[in-house]
Image (cartoon, rainbow, N blue to C red; front, top):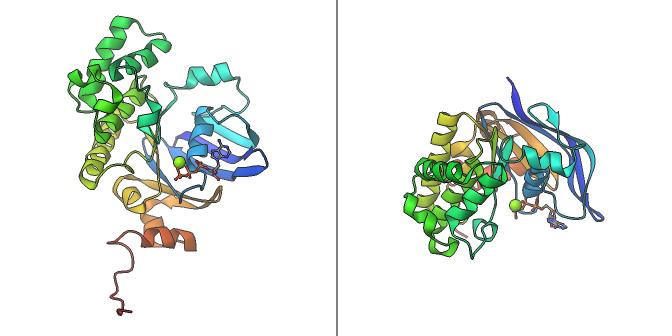
Amino acid sequence: MDTTLRIDSLTVDIGPGRVIDGISFEVAEGRILGLVGESGSGKTMTALAVLGLLPEGAVIRSGQVLLKGNDIVPMSPEERRRLRGKKAAMSFQEPFTAFNPVMRIGEQVTEAMRAHGMSRAGAEKRLAELSRMVKLSPGICRHYPHELSGGERQRMMIAMALSCGPDLLILDEPTTALDVSVQKHILDLVSELQRRKKFSVLFITHDFSVVNKIADDVAVMKEGRIVEKGSKDKVLKAPGHEYTRKLIGCIPRLGDTRKRLPV
Ligand SMILES: Nc1ncnc2c1ncn2[C@@H]1O[C@H](COP(=O)(O)OP(=O)(O)OP(=O)(O)O)[C@@H](O)[C@H]1O
Ligand SMILES: [Mg+2]
């Protein structure tokens, strides 16, 4: 199976702290990998490393980040910028802060496309297509970010990430801030788009029940390390690590449902 993303022995420090500690995993072509772990385990830093968007002060100590076979670690910031959007694109953890509050949402998406060399007319046509794709009415593009619901903002973030047709879509906690019914719509949307457009997905979450619904494969992250990885079915059926069992235990239906004595 071909891989869209292969991370090999990646280590990242920020100041004196090691935030990613020798991680290796792959996202296979056309598959959804759930990267799961508790808060602070290094999931967002991993995503930012893939995009070449690590915060100031972060240093890649070792390892490779191969996007379709090309290692982005030795690349210049300009080379990485050119890959963003087309090779890999990301929907950020906090859509509310990721959007500019004083700019209409549609303009922000077209601006991102124009930065990649698209004409104004081309970008506007594409914006209408993208809104339909994520099931939003085109009229919503004239609104400001605060005028959208959490679910609508998330859809717009996904639309923006998909604007240049990426090989890899990274979704960082796209459903965490949403209530359960909206969460389901977003997961259904991602599954449907992935099936239709055949991109690969790195889906970041702290919630194993979300992984269970959407992922083909799983990598479990703890304190900057990958402690377990494999197909979702294998990891759910026979988790090899205590930490994985603990995370799975948080899924009401899959966890331990034996009746406990009242205390
Ligand atoms: N700008 C920064 N400077 C220094 N340390 C940082 C910075 N951003 C994050 N960290 C540290 O890096 C580690 C990993 O953070 P990261 O944001 O990747 O976690 P996460 O798994 O995405 O957590 P969450 O589920 O809360 O989003 C944490 O210990 C965090 O404190
Ligand atoms: Mg995070």
